[in-house]
Image (cartoon, rainbow, N blue to C red; front, side):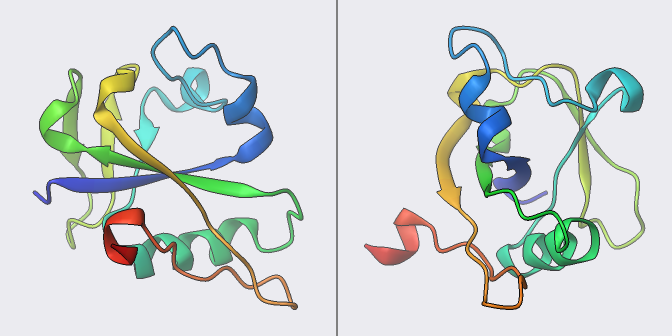
Length: 117
């Protein structure tokens, strides 16, 4: 398991969440877990697969898996897509990074602060 995973979320939804409470995505009640993706290139591929036509702004939550209180399980053979089975405690979110797009709407991999330093 990598020490860092990503969760893609519409910026407007994330900004509207209660910052004093654990994070719960919109689809949590239906899915029963929080979708995550390991690797910046992989998160861009997921964004392009599912959200390219959705013109809203998106951000990625950079999650330190060592600090996640809930259970994390990989259920895909490639071990790229971990699921967090419970609300996400805020202290596990180490960065909120924009995920930018090209003119045609294609998402680019996020550039993290730790990569810019």
